[in-house]
Each structure stands twice: as structure tokens, then as C-alpha cells.
Length: 353
Image (cartoon, rainbow, N blue to C red):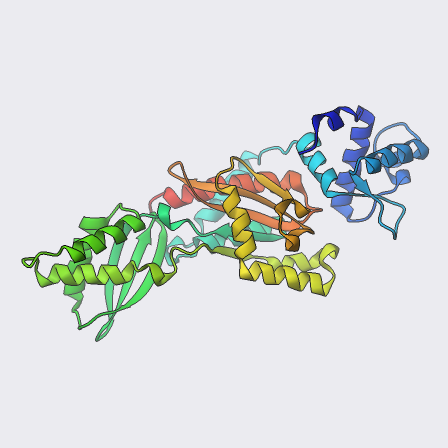
């Protein structure tokens, strides 16, 4: 955050010129010269006056002069000043929200593609990379479980989590089960565990298997054993993860034109560790969070901006989504897009079929 005293040092003319420069650079991606600003800023001032103002802004660290051009571009510090002080994004129009909501509802949630659909939607609407973290498992609760026979000793467990998320697990059993026996086991487990969080289910399963009385019938023992396999912690449900779409969109921006830099960025997005840590930091923050360049704390994102927002289910924060692109992104459009999508995703997750 830039000190308030530096804000107060800028008069209205300097603010107007700086805002015009940032918006033009975001649009065109080319350093902006004083002559261009003098013609397009709407102010009746000479190019020489504009040069003096831009020189002052450069001294403050808000602008930089690339060695290949006499024009200037915003710095990370400049973008931060622009966003915090001069940018007032308007919420999406009601029609745009309705279109976005209709697009989300059109997806086939039953096949577990919810997060893929949202990340693709963020990517297509921003022309950048869209990211959605997988809901945290400590907030996930079981709605229903179903077992289907696959072969002699293999069973497909179908878990419905948080109303809409569907997970399929193949489990090995010590003997063959008929379809009716599997249905009875599922009915027992749904009565016993529906509505509980996944950690609660695991804890209760361990306790009941350990304390199982001799008079408990074999069917219940079998149901508990199958549930233990279906809810095993090594099934990958407790590890942080995210769904990424549209990373190839970044190749169209000249900022990522260097092959080595782009490969390093793609590798980091694939490995996920750094971005997951960054998104974890957003879980406890309110509203839209914006990380510009080196503000993220991760060197691989120095040429990027990340606009993110947490999404909630029943008032509880369960994950984060966002857009990754160059620092030269249209923040006035991306910020309300991310904000609205986070709200709609939370609603989709808690709305029954």
C-alpha cells in the first residue's frame, strides 16, 4: 500500500494524466509518450508540461522508461496506486450476471465437472488463465453414497459431496457382493453418516470399527469396512489442488514472449505449490485480492497479476478462484468478473439438484 502522503502530493492534473497513461498502456501494450497524452488526455496542456508531470511520476516510482522507447509504462508501484486510488470498478450489470449464472447452470454438474467449467468460464471471459481451487475437505460433507458392483471383488463407490460434487472411487473387497447387498450397505451408511464432514466420518468409522461389538451382524461390519476404503485419506481428497484453464492464452501477450520465461511460468502452474500457497493466503481475506508482480512473493509471478476471491458455501469459506494474466490486465473488467463468479460458484455448490 502506498503512503497517504504520496497520494496527497499528486494534484488532479497529475492523477488525470497518470490514469490516462495506465489505461492506454493496458489497452495497447505500448509505452505511452507525452505527445500522445497531450492529445488524448482531455487536458489543454502542452507536451512539454506533460513531460514534466511524467518525470515527476517517474521520480515517485510510478512510471518507468524502457530503454527502447521514449514513452513510459506503469511500474508495479504505479499499478498499485492506480488500483487503490484511481480505479473504481463497476459491478457487472444485472444482464451480465444473469448471463453468467445461466452459463453456470447450463453445465452438467453431475459428472463432477463443476470446477473445470468455472475455470474454463473465467478463462474464456478474461482471455487469460482461470483457476479454481478444489474445496477444502474439512468443509466437505457427505450427501449420499452409492455402491455398484464392478467385478467379483471390486466395487465402485459413488460419493455426492456438498450437494453437487460427485466423486467416484474403486475399492477392493475381500469377497463378492450382490447388488442388493451393496444397496443395503449404502442405505445403512447414508442413515449413519449423511450430513457429516469427511473428517468426522473418518473419525467415527475408526471408532466404530475399533469398538465393534460381537453382536453386530456381518452386513454392518462389511458396510463399515467398505466405507473406510471409500473415505480413505490416501485417496487424494485432503491434498490442496486446483483446476487450471487457458494458460495457453498467456502466450498471446508480448510480456511472456521469451520462451524461457514462459516455460518457467507454465512449470510453476503445473507444479501448483506456489500458487496454492498464494491462494491459501486469500482464504482469510475479504473481497477481491489483487497481487501485482512481485507483490505475490513468488519470483515466477513477477511478470503476472493474480486477481482472486474466496468462495463460500453456507457462509463458510471453502476455496478460492481467480484470473492470472500480465500486470497489464484490464482490472476494471477482471475484478467484477472474479467477484461475481465467486458468488455464483458458492451458490451453485449449495443449491440442490
